[in-house]
Length: 251
Image 1 (cartoon, helix red, strand yellow):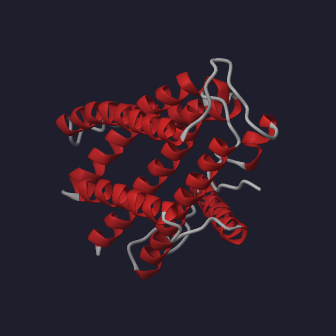
Image 2: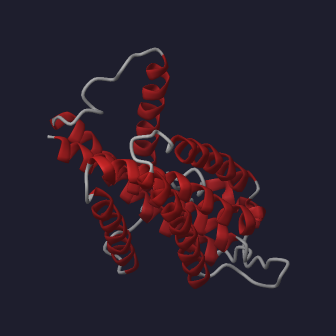
């Protein structure tokens, strides 16, 4: 059974592929190298637009002009993510668009954090990619295995975190704030550490999911879909590192 805490990489994604090798209309099949290459392309596209948004926000520090990049990127990225999830055959187009739009959000929010905590963005980026490669090495070498119990635990924890964040948003609309977990105290830092760990473990589930897709002979376009799903987790992990580091520096 295939599980992932990432909504883009869920159990039902490959159910329509059946058993045995499935060949796409262009005669190709999903490969690990192809997925890795396309993940790199998505990261590069996000970096390009993130750099643009970063420069724009940094040059207008204190004017509040970052809102168009933050909200535009967040909403646009969310819409494109939904389209990609429900129309995965469109992923060769929608996944790059998602990366470009999400880059505006990441660049703007990163600039805001950097203005308040100089050096925090470099630290968050370094931690994100070090975590990615460390877990990839651990997974490929067999040090970490995505067993069913492991998957169930990570998915359950991811769902719990999602509910907490949803409750935070809903209660915030009524001016109610969940105490401690979003502050820079011990409880808040502990909560962020927990979320970072769960986000990182989702990478293992993503690796396992992509590997299963390759073994099942998924169509070639699923390389873009797998890269998109991995990108979603990386964005989440990076944002959580930003939150954790900001709490540590606020003490």
